[in-house]
Amino acid sequence: ALFGPPLRDWRGDGAIARRNKICAILLMALGFAYFWLAIEPPAIGLLAVAAIMIACGIFIATRPEPPNK
Image 1 (cartoon, rainbow, N blue to C red):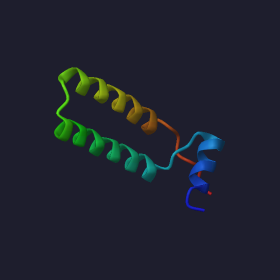
Image 2: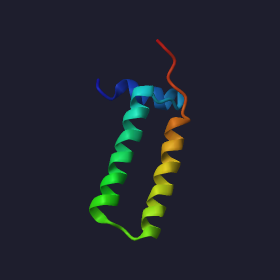
Image 3: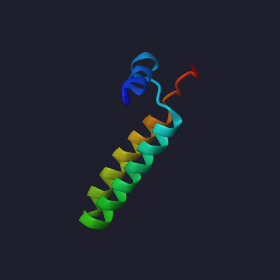
Image 4: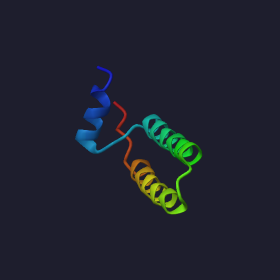
């Protein structure tokens, strides 16, 4: 029951609830901060990961929200 409604929203409308978008993007940002500070990658690696995460964040943010039921 926990994952049922979000999966139905995604499969039916390609929709992600606003709260889930915020949570996903926030956790991506925290993961990136950990990667940057704990791993200390070279600049090219840092930029590559940042570009991928930004692209994923934009994709998530631009998905429609599910209709109110």
